Length: 393
Image: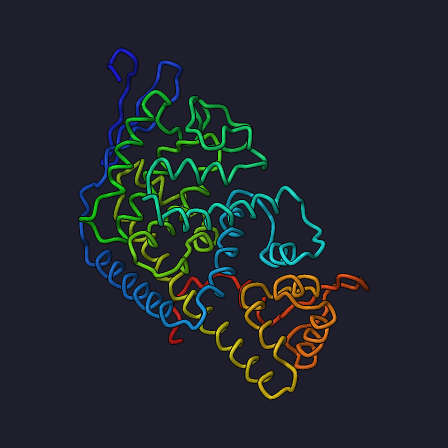
C-alpha cells in the first residue's frame, strides 16, 4: 500500500490500523511470530495446559475403542462452534436426527451443524495426504458452506470484497473491526501459511497465534469463525499433540464469549499477546481436563453396561450395540438392522434387552420407527463445559 492511498496510520505491536480514503480503518496484521514476554503467569499457564493435554493424549492412546468417543466429541464441537454463530441446534437434536428421529428444529440449523461435522472429519482424513495449508483451508470452507445460509458467499474461495465485523445492520463505517482489504489479502495469507510450518514455538502457543491471525485476516465472506476453530483441532492432530481429535475449544469460547472476542481485540488494539495467550492456554487446560473427565465417565458407563449384559443368554447383539450407543446414544431398530447387518426382529429383541437393564428407553411415541435413547450417556455428552479446574478425576 502506498502512502497516498491511505492516511492516519495507527500502529500497535500486532499490526497497523490504516484509514482508507472511504473513511473506514482496516487492520493490517504484522507477520507472525510476535515477540512474546514470558511472564511467570504465562509460563505457568503453558506448563499447566501442556501437562493436561499430555495426559489427555496418554488417555487417548489407552482407550479401548477411541473411535467410539471421537464421534460424539466431534459432534459436540460442531454444536458449540455453530452456536457461537447463532445456530441453535443442541447435541441431542443432532444425534437424534443422525439416528433417524424426527427433530423439531430448523433444517437449516441442523444442516449447518452437520456440515461442520463433515468438514472436521474431512480435514482429519485429508491431513494424511495434505498438510495444513491455504488449499486445505479452502477445501474445509467449501465443505462447511455447502447448501447452507451464506452459501452465496463463494464457498471455497477467498473474498474479493471488503468484509467487516459488527452488529446486524452496521455499515462498514460503523464496524467494530475491519480486516485487511482484499487487494492485500494474498500477502497476509501467504505469510500466515508460512507460519503454519514454523516449528520453533511451543505447539500450543503456535496454535493460539495461528488462530488469532486467521480470524484477524478474515479471508472469507462468511464462515471464518467456524473454519478458524476447526483449524485449532486439525493443527493439534497434524503435529501429533493428540493421537485423535479429542480436544476442542468451541465450548470454552462459547461459554466465555465476551472474553474470547475481548482477547482477540486486545491483540489488535493494544498488542496484548500475553492476555490472548493466557486466555487461550487456560481454555486448552480446562477443555483437556473436561475431555478427560467426560471420556472417563463415558468409558465407565459403557463398561458397566457390558458387564450387565455379559450374564444374559442371547445378549450378543445387545452387547455389540453398546459400542453403537457410545458413538450415538440414540438408536432405532432400522438403524441397528442396517449397521449390524441383522434381521429387524433381532434388532428389536436386542433393544428390548437394553430396555430391561435400564440402558435405553423409548423417547418417541410412534409405533413404527420408534427411537430409543441411552439418557445417562446423553447427559454426560450434553453437560456444559467445565470452566474451573477439577480437584481430581
